Image (cartoon, rainbow, N blue to C red):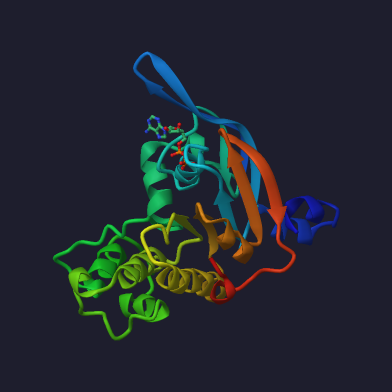
Length: 250
Ligand code: ADP
C-alpha cells in the first residue's frame, strides 16, 4: 500500500506511486470576530493515486475543511497541500480556479442542480467550460441515467438527482472526485445505489475518490480510512479486503 512501502522499491516504481495529495503540517483557522476556530491542527497526510479514501469523524472534526483544501475551494492558514508536485497553497486565485475547473469533480449532499434545465443540460453546462470533456450522454449513461436525460430535476428521485450530480462531476474526466456526504440525504437502498455508481466510476475511469461520511459502514468499501478527531488525524487504516457497495449493510 501507498507511498511509504513504495519508497523501499527502487526507481520507476517509486515514481509511479507518487501520492496524489501530500498534506504537510496543515493548520486551518477560521477567524470569527474576536475568536479563532482551529478547524485543522498541523495535519500530515498522504493520499495515493487511484485510491478510494473515506474520511470519518464526528461533526466538527474538520472533514469538510480538509475536503475543501483538497479541492482548492479554500487555502490552509499554514502548511502545504501538494497535488502531485504543485502546492495548492501557493497558487494564484486564477490558477486555483483552473485547478478546480479541470482537475476536480465535486459531489455534495444536496445536488445543486439547476431546476430549469434537463439532466443533459445540467451536465452540458460543465462541458462548455473545459477542453476534451466526455459527452454529456456518456456521463449520464455511466451513472445509469441514459433513459432519463431529458427529465428535469423535479421529475427525478433524490438518488437520480444525485446521479446527475455525479455525471456532472465526471464529465470533465477529473483526476479526483471529492464527495461530501453524498448519501446524507438518501434512504439506505438509494444511498447504496449512489455508492455503487461512485465505486464504478472509480473502477472504470480510474478516478481517485475521497468520500466524507458519518456512516462508518461505508468505510468498508474504501482502500484507506482516515479518522479525524478535533482537527487532527486520529487514525489511518487500510482495508485489506474491501466490501463492495452492494454488500454494505446498515
Ligand atoms: P466536519 O465536516 O467534520 O463537520 P468542519 O470542517 O465543517 O467539520 O468544521 C470544523 C470546525 O470548523 C468546526 O468547529 C466548524 O464550526 C468550524 N468551521 C467550519 N467552517 C467554518 C467557517 N466558514 N467559519 C467559521 N468556522 C467554521
